[in-house]
Amino acid sequence: MATQNTAMDNAALIKEVNEAHKHKKYSVGYHAQTVVAVIVTLIMLFPLYWMIATSFKSAEEVQLVIPTLFPHEFHPENYLNVLQKANFMKYYWNTIVMTAGILLLQVGTGVLAAYGFAVGRFKGRNALFYVVLAVGVVVLNAPRAIRSWA
Image (cartoon, rainbow, N blue to C red; front, side, top):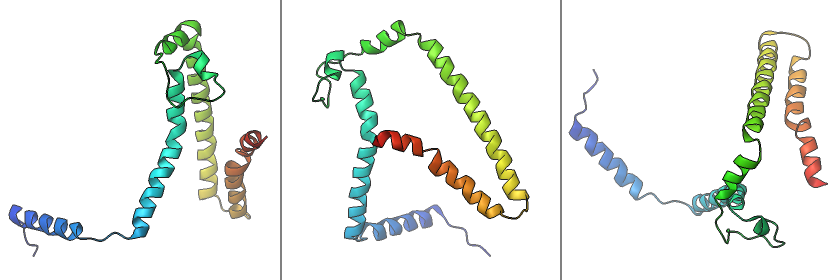
């Protein structure tokens, strides 16, 4: 028969767990892992910061030979200029159409391929699966990587 815990029992249990956790010693490796994780996170977020900070710079400041980390002058009107001078809605609509088309084609072919690999039993199925996986991971990203190295 199960015992029924009261609110007092739950509070005592929570206090006991908190006390046990308070005295836990963390290893140097744990702290090193945390520091590395924070550094990697900052490195990965830096391009997003750079994009946003650059969007508020003047055209002259963007073209400086030695870039600045923070905008010297804050130019929020850059966003209004983009919306007024460029045909933003046309570009936005093109993006929506392209994204929706690519999404539908990729999901459709992915579902068909997944069904074929899950249900179909044929010779070389595992080898073909690894080829499809490798092509999706390596080949589609290879031109981008080659362009960035050149």
